[in-house]
Every structure is written in structure tokens, then in C-alpha cells.
Length: 409
Ligand SMILES: NC(=O)C1=CN([C@@H]2O[C@H](COP(=O)(O)OP(=O)(O)OC[C@H]3O[C@@H](n4cnc5c(N)ncnc54)[C@H](O)[C@@H]3O)[C@@H](O)[C@H]2O)C=CC1
Ligand SMILES: O=C(O)CCC(=O)C(=O)O
Picture (cartoon, protein in one colour):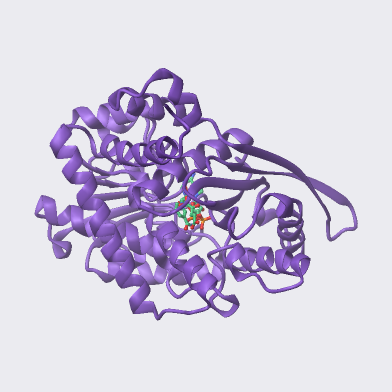
């Protein structure tokens, strides 16, 4: 998917053939084995990865995913997407991504801490506050970031808060990072609704994924008066045409760790949920959920891509043919609130000068507004989809950095 998307953008930008591999191929791909002692005394070894895409704009930046789906290909694609995302947002970073092939829910808290610490320990030669800065992604959270920071700091013999972002506020994290991605998604949904003349009080939404991104997005949509008709996670999907009680769902997940068990009457098939009529559909779980099988049947007016890579290139072609019928907020724009506030966290850590929540969120929304306008203006000017416009801006910025540094003639 990542290569196909890049080729389409390279063709659109008419990039010379001999520049393409240089732009696409990652600078470094690191694979490590992470042995830990299980609670029963046995030893288990987990595979860990980190891919650093390019170093032309500054350190690399990106999350760490703990999931059974993780392999070097998935991590590489996510690292490349991080590059276009950071460049589109105007951040001084190349892209990176990392992960461990593991189901984190199968580990005890002690085992999760051991794995987190071992992963960071293996990565110490390859990361640094000005080399590669990690953050949370699927299956990791603020606590895992605190363990990463502590492990790195113990090795350095001093506290290095700026080595990771997405930490708890108590350990040098910033106000607003935990909820930044979901808030950013909903802020951009608001901009899209304004363009389409949809009023929040009359709007409806469906959210796939109920973790850091999806849970916060559903909560914020609800807070803004949007009726959330459906939600899902890996255990269950619920739909109510009258609107779900989102605060109650959040309480259920806080108590049980999953959506399953909430309500038998409201259950719906997970695939079917995506096809229900609504104004806003937010895929906020995994890759490749909007495919050639369901793209033509989506009945939303705004597709807000909270997840990375939720739409396959085949589906994208189908969505593009639908024209004004469906407004896509592409992933590298839609979920960029997370890395934008990570950048704010890194800056605050480097300066040891911390901002209040209102300042963080105010700057985030201002930043997203500027990028949203750049993307929609370019899409209108060049008569291309918002995804092509967003990717074209991101890829061009990386290319310009490489070119002016002398890497291309
Ligand atoms: N955490 C962050 O700051 C950012 C995350 N993202 C992307 O957002 C997506 C979600 O990440 P997080 O919310 O952080 O992860 P998370 O681990 O907090 O939550 C993931 C959610 O997806 C659900 N899920 C998994 N498989 C599913 C399925 N088949 N159907 C429905 N739901 C399913 C899980 O049950 C969980 O509710 C990923 O694509 C991630 O790369 C993008 C930018 C930043
Ligand atoms: O906050 C960050 O540095 C990166 C977040 C992330 O992994 C993403 O945007 O996909």
C-alpha cells in the first residue's frame, strides 16, 4: 500500500525515476530479540523492530506498536507514512515506527514492564533525543513510555525526558498529549462539516476502535453534540440509531478493558457497522479496513481516518470516483494531532519550560487549521483528492530538504 501510494504521488509530481528509491527506502531497519522471564519462570523471546525512514529534516519520530500484526514490513510502511505526516505538518522530523510482535493483553503488568524495558534497552544504540524519538501507538500507552524513558535515563545516568513523548505529565509529559490525536481528528471533522454545511447538533457518527484515538474521538464528538450511533473494538460492535451513551461506554471500557459485555440488544456485526448511514465515519483501529469490497457501499459523508492506512489504494480509487459525495480527511492529516503535540512535548522537555493545557490545545488547533487549508486549497487547485494533495505536500517537502542539502542534482 505504502509503495503504491508513493508511486502514484511520484507520478503526480513527475519525480525523476532516480530520485524515487532515495525518497522511499528507509535509512535504517533494526530487528532485535527481546527475551523476558514470564511469571511462571519460563523465558519467552519476542521480536522487536524499529525503522527510521529518513534523517534529512532532523531526528526521526514515531510511535511504538505492541501487536501480533507487527512485522518489519508493517513497521516500515508506518515509518514512511510518518515521514509524509511530519513533513505535511511542518515538523522538523523524519518518520520512524517501531514495535514488538506480541499481544499485550496476554502479558501480566510485570511481564509488560519487562518487555518494554528490554525493547528500549535493545534500542539504546539506535535512538537519542536528537536521533530518534519514540511515542505511543497501538497497544502501548503513557505507562510504557514512562518505562522507556526510565530505562534510557538509567543507562545515561541522568533523566532524559526528551527521549520519548507521550509520557505521563508526572514524568515530563505534556498536558494534552494523551487526548491529542482524538481531539485533532474531531477538530478536523468540525472543519469538514463546516465546508459541507453539516451542523454538529444534527450530525451522526460511527467510530471503529475504542482505544486512545477512537475512544477520545467518540467522547469529543459526543461532547460537541454529534450523535454517536456506533462504536466497535476488537471484541464487539454496538449500534443504536437513536445514539449511544458514550460516557457510559467509556465507563464500561475503563472497568472491563473492552467493549464486550456492554449490551446484547445493541450488538451488530463489526463489518456491517461500517456500512450504516451516518455523517462521519472514523476508522480508528487498524490498516486496510476500507477496501474494494466496502468502499462503494460506505454511507457516510465524511471519512475521517484516525488510524494509519485504513484505506487500501483500490478503495481509494473507488472513493475518488465518488467525488464530492464523500469528503476524505486522509490519515496523514487526520491523525497528525498526536505527533504535533508530541513535537510540543519534545520542545518543552528540551527547554524544561512547560505550557498549560489551553496553550497546547490552542496551538494544536491553529496548526491543524493551517494544514487543513493547505490541503484543501491544493486539492481544489490541482483537481486531485485530499489524499493526493496531502501526500504531495509531504513528499515535496522531504524532496526539497534532500535536494537543497545536495542529495539530488
Ligand atoms: N496513539 C496515537 O497517538 C496515534 C495512533 N494512531 C493510529 O490510530 C490507530 C489506533 O491507535 P490507538 O488508538 O493508539 O491504539 P489503541 O491500542 O489505544 O486502540 C486500538 C483500538 O482498536 C481496536 N481494534 C483492534 N482491532 C479491531 C477490529 N478488528 N475492529 C474494531 N476495533 C479493533 C482495539 O480493540 C482498540 O479499541 C492505529 O492505526 C495507530 O497507528 C495514529 C496517530 C497517533
Ligand atoms: O507522537 C508521535 O511521535 C507519533 C505518533 C504516531 O505514531 C503516529 O502519528 O502514527
